[in-house]
Amino acid sequence: MITVYGIRACDTCRKALKWFEAKGLAHQFHDLRSDGLDTDRVTDWLGSPFADTLVNRRSTTWRGLGDTERAASGDALSALLVRHPTLVKRPVIAVGPDAGDELITVGFDPKALALTLGVSP
Image 1: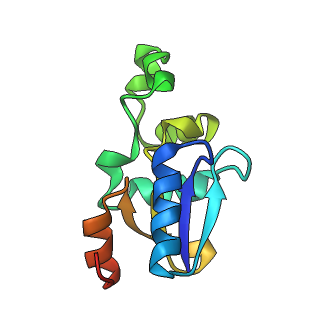
Image 2 (image 1 turned 120 degrees about the vertical axis):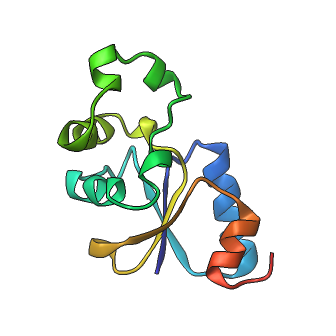
């Protein structure tokens, strides 16, 4: 099962969800604000090849953080993302059983996603 993690009000997340629907790909949406985010999942994401792109350093939330929070790493960074889910670059797209999702992309690039999932662009 494909899970799209994001925020319902995010334009990019809405585009990704429409893309999945247009391609007829089964998926579920996990709203980071209303459904929450747990530290274990964030820690797994930060251990993935997408760790460098996971934090949205262009967000309003990021600009409002102090220098100490911006320098966070490891467990402190995981806790920061759980407290402020808007810091997660969206959407995060994962595949697999819910407890052990494997990230396939962070952000929405339709051509790259189509190639990864083996569907027509």
